[in-house]
Length: 258
Image (cartoon, rainbow, N blue to C red; front, side, top):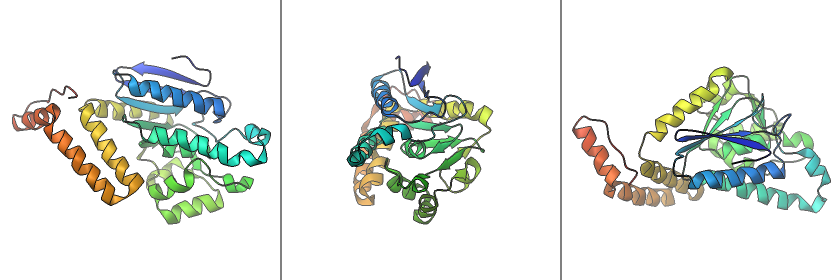
């Protein structure tokens, strides 16, 4: 895979996608397009089980490209929003776990991108926020919907209405990220997490993500129905039988992803 605005490295069952749009990894339309094409290819790559998303340099992603905003006609705002929302929805709906390794500033569209990932890790000094109101705008790439579900409506309102960021340390305390690690250890810890997931039955991982996503998007009643269906599929699968047998027999499971 060869792109201008990002790089892709495959390490065993893990793909590491790094945003590369210096100086701050702004999410211009080309970057978003390349990101969409990349994850589509990785979704189909049989050897890849987990995807890590991070930023080159000292930034994760510091938001949209404001020069593109200024160049766009005033009546194109809704189109820009809908296009980016569609891409982030696609990321969130991946059947393979997507882990954000937030190594630096993660602002505006950058945080909205991270919120579309399934898991988030951050460096303690990283800044995470939605500062759009300071520019006379509001979050338009899904932030008004995903942030409240992640940190609660009260904290989300505070972050969105003030535009003030939180540090990675605080992000860990409020549940915005799952864990916080020193910047120099962040990618290694993301790989450890990815490897732990990659060792499991990938059929099971897909079913679990699907059930979680159903409840996230459509509410608990739909989520429960999806859970029951996914549990049934896992229960009837070869991996389900193998996993239970291995536990009873006190041996490591040999999953075939079937």
